[in-house]
Amino acid sequence: MKIISMIPARYRASRFPGKLMQDLGGKSVILRTYEATVNTKLFDDVIVVTDSDIIFNEIVNNGGKAVMSKKEHECGSDRIAEAVELMDIDIVINVQGDEPFTEKESLKKLIDVFKDDHNKEIDLASLMVHITDEDEINNPNTVKVITDKFNFALYFSRSPIPYPRDKNVGAKYFKHKGVYAFRKEAILDFYRLPMLPLEASEKIECIRYLEYGKRIKMVKTNVQGVEIDTPEDLERAKKLWK
Image 1 (cartoon, rainbow, N blue to C red):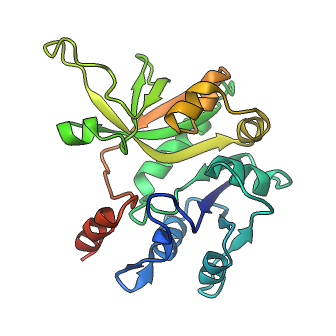
Image 2 (tube, rainbow, N blue to C red):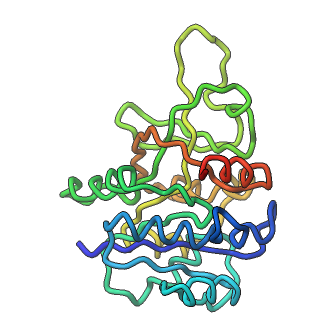
């Protein structure tokens, strides 16, 4: 299988504009993410795909690979789909541009899902982390996921799921980490299919796959890292980096 990583990178993030160009230990957040992904040595290629000249130049001027998106997109998956449509690849892994603590172990688990899927029953795979902090469970910026007994995703939400009507049943909460591995056909399908009401309501792009009957295999990881969505997240990332 030919496996690449694409890092969608939008400069004008709604909650924290310009976050990918913020300094993290002497380098920009997006460059840290790119270098961390390359350093896993898991991929045939690693490419940043962006609508921003600033981000494009940041990567290319530091010896990396980047491509410009041809048009505006609703989400990172659309941006990637446009970029890979004519590429000869089997699997593409979407690493979010605000994940500078990307590491090898979790990404390898995603790749292994497809190596073991001989009948090609899995359309995409993604990561989840067990969480116990009530503030995080109730935080709408933290996307939660519930799965069936085989770890296929049933639903994603910004609300706490499952709802804790009975706290004595031992239900666990899992945070969805925004790292996806797609079969090429699956991400192209995503690009062509219109957004439906559940995705539009939650603003969680992987819900589109569920609404159209795709199968998402969730993989447990113990690596939390820091996703930089807010200035407060950036400060936490700086402390962790030190």
